[in-house]
Amino acid sequence: MNRAPLPLRNDERLIFALDVPGKAEALEWVDTLGDAVSFYKIGMELLASGEYFDVLDALAKRDKRVFVDLKFFDIPATIAGVIRRLSQWPVSYCTIHGWHPGMMEAAAAANSSEMRLLAVTVLTSMGRPDLAQMGIDREPVDVVVERALAAQRAGIDGVIASGQEAAPIRAATGQGFSIVCPGIRPGGPVGDDQQRTVGVAQAFADGADAIVVGRPIRLAADPRATALAIQREIAESIK
Image (tube, rainbow, N blue to C red; front, side, top):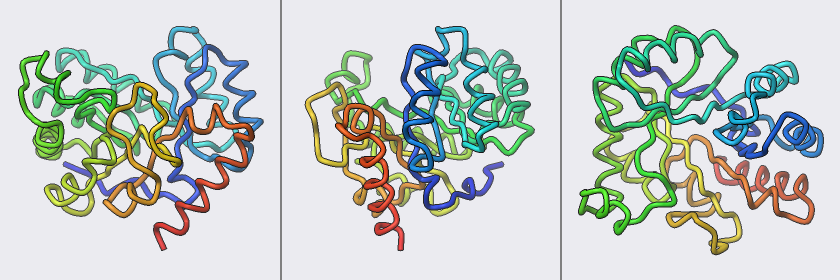
C-alpha cells in the first residue's frame, strides 16, 4: 500500500544532487554547503567510484537525509532483493523505473523500512521526439501521468518527474502521493541537457513535495549562498 509522504522540514525540501566522482569531492561539497542543505541525492557517477556506501554512511552520520537515485530496473525477484537489502540503510528516497507493474509491486512488498520508493516516469532530459524513438508517440505529460497512476496502484509511494507534470500528476493521484521534481532551474533554462524544467516556486505551486537541484548550485559563484536563496524561495512558496 502507498504510505504517506515523507515528513519533511522546509529545509529538507531542497535536495542537492551530489553528482561527483568520489567520496572526497562529495564530503567537500557537504562541508561547503553546511546547514544550507539537509538532503542529498547520490547517483550513478558516485556508484562507479566504489565509495557509494561510504558516502551514504558519512551523510547519515552528519544527520543528512539520503536519496539513493540508481533507477533500479530488473526482474521482480531481483528488484525485491535489492530493495530488501537497501531498506537496511538510512535511506529516505529510492528510485526504481516505473515501467513494469510487477516489478513495482515486488519492490513495494520488499520495502520494510521508512524509505519511500519513487517511480521514474520520463526522464527530464527527454521530449516527445525521444519518446517517439522508443516507440511511444505521445506527449511526455500523458506518459508521465499514466505511469504515476500505475505506480500508485502498485503500492509505490510516489514519483520523480519534471515539475512541468507536477500539477497533472497531483490532479490524477490526489494528496498523499509523493512528487519529487528534478531538473529545477531557479533562474530559468540554462541550455544544458534538461528539457522539461521549471522554477522553484512553480514546482511547489503545482504540488511538488521536494525538488532536486544540482548544476545551478554546483556551478554558482557562491554555491552556499545560492542554496540559501533557494531555501528562502521554498519557504515563501509553501507558506
